[in-house]
Length: 72
Image (tube, rainbow, N blue to C red; front, side, top):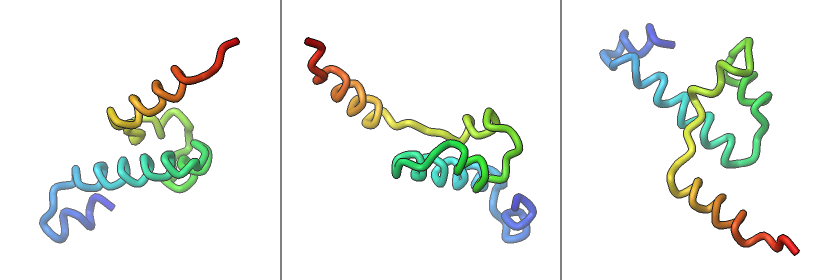
């Protein structure tokens, strides 16, 4: 894929940015890490982690939901 970016004059880092966005959106839609690993073509699950990007907003939303749990 990197060679395709270079062939049209784009920086190869665009490839990683697109993969990160793709993986993050799949996670947001509830897809499993195993599925994302398969779609990104990685042989090891830990190779997926660099592509996962959790936004500050998503972090706040998750913490807010956790704070609202009834612990009684």
